[in-house]
Image 1 (cartoon, rainbow, N blue to C red):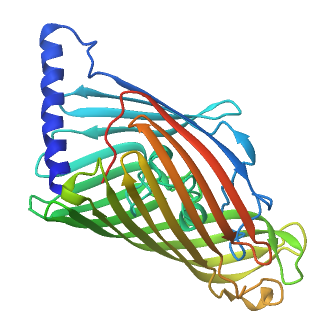
Image 2: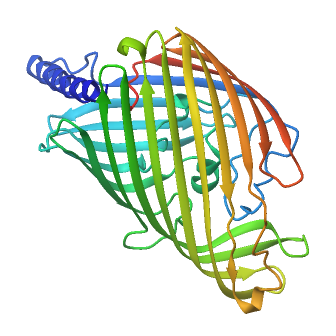
Length: 402
């Protein structure tokens, strides 16, 4: 399947360039290929027992995307893509906030003629680290992202910068890549400065086993700096909420894998997918405790980790079921002497969550989903969660990644 995807992508690129050349030679630039426009409409109903803004125990200094309660329009997504000339293509994805306003998810230019397996992307894009990070929300297999993505990346790591990928000319799928950027996405701090704010390295390798099995494994490294990153409502040793500031280095390593099986190689009828990812983050620097009060600054370092394992089974055409298990480890912090009596160093609690989903897709353009979850991310406050979701796709939309 991986080989077929690579071959199909190459053929599609050739046809795309041929169509663009034909349009240019005939003077008809307004054709079906250029530009392509799509609109994703989605919405959810959520029922949760605990306040969605409360972060996971031991991760109060991290973002918490949380869940919307009750009926929620969700985020509509508008995409535009087109060839620019024989050398470049452009892609823009705009998120339409239900409360009003538009934000830019992706807006990048990509080369089409570098050759030798190289591809250059520059602008705003989702980082190539891990497995799930590059996938847009409408392509997720569950209503929400795994805990480790929500906590470590604020759901997804987005970057303003440059990405270079190399696809090896080999029978086995081998992809190497690197990025440099502004460092705008968490855990980086988006500040006005010259130079590079973050960097990413990643590698993926995969292959087919016969016509029924395919696999891919990968490794990632992310490095950035945090500058006066503010965290509010962080509990101290007395249980009181305070506001802290952290400045220092943040380095995250990750491993990912996915394995797919489809009887007779026909994924339209039935398939099984197993995937998982693990991330470990080490942050070292200085923590200013209780900025509105005692304002004490001293050294701070901690290594935190998390993983998820999930499976999705399409048991008959159009119907799928999925199971996902999440776990986080807050680690034991090394706290400077001045703050040893203020900052909690060991929470002795590992947040977990188990989710079950069932979805139905009347066609490749629509999906209806139900999901239940047993959330134990906040110590002493278990949460039974229930979600309904719809995802509808209008217009032209490219194939998703493997």
